[in-house]
Image 1 (tube, helix red, strand yellow):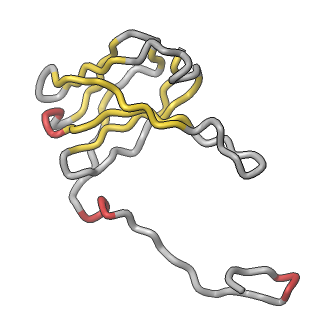
Image 2: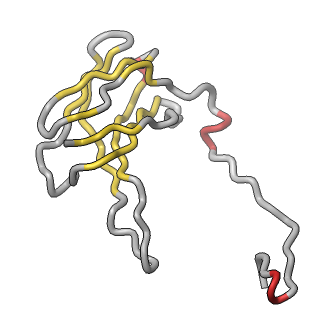
Length: 124
């Protein structure tokens, strides 16, 4: 039996530390500025150092797990283009069925597969 359960007199003292592969591929991209709120079918700008190295932009809806099901979490890749060395112009989908309104984590991923630490944005 794995794991700890004090009521069964089982105390597991080992732990595992997970370090994703991207921890060893250099610095994470950093979003210097972004809007707090984004709107359906509209564009918004993200300021990020070395915007030319960004290979994907996405929003991820946070998890809402109940009864072993997770109906809320979703990954939505966004179309974007680099406007300059530090600015990305990003398009928000117009389809509300694809992206229900609410808070999402905003990710940029560089050419090495390294994501940023995501800020939250409100989709409305």
